[in-house]
Length: 170
Length: 93
Image 1 (cartoon, each protein chain N blue to C red):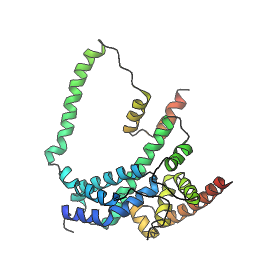
Image 2: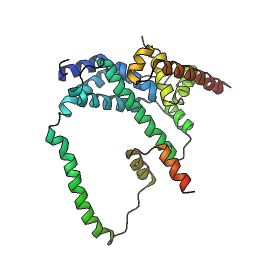
Image 3: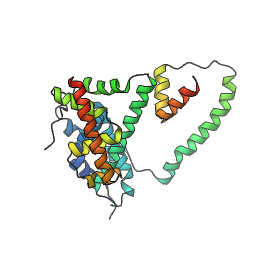
Image 4: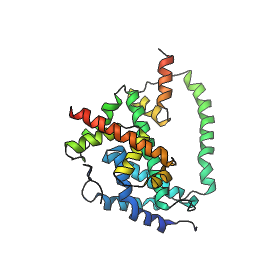
């Protein structure tokens, strides 16, 4: 495959920036944080462009960078909360309550908070399957996790979300 | 069509985002091979100078204190993990 250049990069921006924004937003919750991570993703993509040889599709490659950036952000967020002796669940819920760009109804708020409280890998597979309606095969290409493990992860994530949403209602 | 999950964005956000992202190639020029190694050489030089000066200064001044927030952000930038924090707290009880 010929090397990708600036024109290819701009095509990726036009074609995928909005979808990629929502992919990241589902994972991290806050609009401001998502805005930062989207930009970091495309900066990384631009720097890695010379070494991209088409082993995967451009979208899979971009989604992989974005997912890793989002996961790195979430890890730092947890460490920050731990160092400040904050409850991780409280810190996670504040992400939704403090975001001026969340105006969902009560059911959507409960779902968003439940997703924020999932372990990282379950959060990734749940959001990609439920919101982005990606196939397990496509998710497997992005995450490097087997389809079987992803199906199990999605099952556990769904059960945990049902429990968390029920807890909020009670 | 995207599932509605309650999340929104400011008006005109995506147009602005595309404009910002399209400026990345101009801002992030591809480094030459020398430019890739230059930071490491500069870091090595700075470290050597810092060791020389630090030895002198440490004996002459008191160490300034950092705020809790500064310490936390420093630890986060060093990629410390939760497991390392737990180990530290347990070993220092």
